[in-house]
Structure formats: structure tokens, C-alpha cells
Image (cartoon, rainbow, N blue to C red; front, side, top):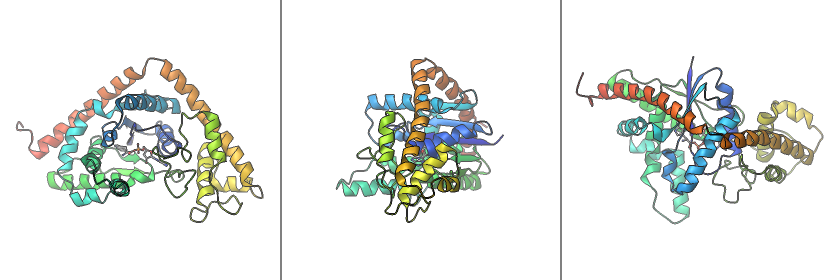
Length: 333
Ligand code: TYM
């Protein structure tokens, strides 16, 4: 069975972009692949998190994974901070990556731009070193695929390069992972500015649907989503980014192909299309929220995480021991 691995940061509330780009694909893969899924709480520390919020967001994220349908009997689900080996391997791999490579990462460059716009030159070192820890998360478990949204593809490609570098320096140790991005829904855009990504840190919150938003709020956000000047429902990312984004959301949640949806709405206006989409989004979120309520009122999250961490630790210890032997860190043979 091929192996997949991925993670999500518990920063802010989980968005429809995270759900469509990552969580929903994880659920669909769990029967065909061996899945390792974790909460990237170490990565979330690159930006200050209020402890109370971090705790809540972490619990919400686990509950949402489960509510979306991840089955802990099939998937290894754990907190990154529970497996100390990630940080240790992150250090070794950080010693093998160049500063030039790290400074070319889009996520880092965006932080630099944001800091410049704030006229604030201070950027934490964590965001610069972020990819090394992510390389460790990935390479530790020899996954065949890393399912991520478009924005994380560059990081997975770097992990692949570092794996190659390590293998050629110390002999074959790591499998070369491949990023796996969904053909539709790999980059859900803001509902208010369809040229930028739907993001947890949306300044007004209007461009972003949060999975735990009250259903009527999400519906309103769809109804007031920015569309384009003409009124045909046609997929054209370049010239009609607003409607194309809504078509992607419709396609994934409504389980129809984009041409099928275009045909359904031929000669119909945006109003009708949006109303139907609002219903579809509302229904999907309602299902998740109902299960989420059951999960948070139950008492089994700790147990799931403990079991997941135990499993992950077993794999990670073995891999780290191999890495340390190869590098000469371990002195006994
Ligand atoms: P994070 O928490 O920013 O995002 C989690 C996942 O959601 C995807 N995503 C989106 N997909 C479609 N449309 C959007 N608007 C959208 N916004 C976010 C992301 O691409 C991602 O797949 N660095 C990672 C966490 C991480 C990780 C890893 C992932 C840490 N270690 C190892 C894979 C493997 C991150 O920031 O995800």
C-alpha cells in the first residue's frame, strides 16, 4: 500500500479552502493509502499564538478532521509536538539546506513583503527555517505522496531536493516524495478578492468561509461573493476569476464536473447559481458541524492522539536512528 502524509497548522479557524484543498482529499484517500496526518503545531509558532486560542484551535482541528470523516482506525493522527524526533531531524536537514533555497520560498517571501508593508523589519527566524522542519515531517516517514494545496507544493519540492542531497551524500536513506495537488480546488480563492488565496488571516473575514461559521453566515458570504461583469456561468480563471472560484467550490461539494454545472446553468443568472451553491455549502457544513458537536462532547480525542503519537514515534525513532548512524552522529555501530 502506498503511503501519504500531510499536516495542517492549528492557526486560526479552519477555512473552506483548507477543507477542499486538504481535509476532504485526505478523507477520500484513506481507503486506498496508508495515511499519516498530523497537526503542525510546531509550525504554527512562527507567528505568536495566544495560548488559549492555540489550544482551542488545535482541539477544533482534530475534531474537524474526525467530523469530516477521517477514521482513526485507518489513519495515524497525531500532534507534531508529541513526536520529538521531528525537531531533531529538522535540525540535521536544516544543516543541509542553503540560505538561498530558504529565501526563495514563496511563504517566506510573502512574510518579508508583509513586514515591509507594515514598515516593520522584524521577521522571526522561524518562518525562514520553516521548510527544514517541514522537510523533516515529510522525509521521516518515507511517504510516496504529500497531498497539499497549491501553495505548499514548493515546500514539498524542496523536501524532495533535500532527500536527494542526503541520499547522494550518505547513501540511500529517504524516499523522494511527490506533491499531490487536487486538479480542482487546489487553490480556493477569497470570495471578496478572487485573485488572492482564501486565507485564515482574511482581514475582514468576508472573503473566507470558516467551517464552523454559523450556516446562515456562510450562505450570506456566498451570496455576496464578488463575481464578474458579464453574467454567463463559464469557467475562465483568467478573465472570470470570481465565478471560476465558485464553480470549483460547487464542483467539489456538489460532486459534479465543471462542464456539467455550466450546462445546468446555461441561460441562467448568477443569482440562481449562487443561491444553489449557498444551499450546497450550507448542507455540507451542517453535516460537519453536527458531527463536530458530537465529537467535542465525547471524550476520545486524547486517546486517539496518544495512539497516533505512539505509532508515529515508533516509525520516527527507527528512521532517526538510521539517519544518525549514516551521518556518524551515533558512535556505536
Ligand atoms: P496550512 O495549515 O497553511 O494549510 C493546510 C492545507 O490547506 C491547504 N490550503 C488550501 N487549499 C486550497 N485552497 C486554499 N485557499 C488553501 N489554503 C490552504 C494548504 O495547501 C495545505 O495543504 N506548511 C503546511 C503545514 C505542514 C505540512 C507539513 C504539510 C507542516 N508540515 C508536511 C504537508 C507536509 C501549512 O502551512 O499548511
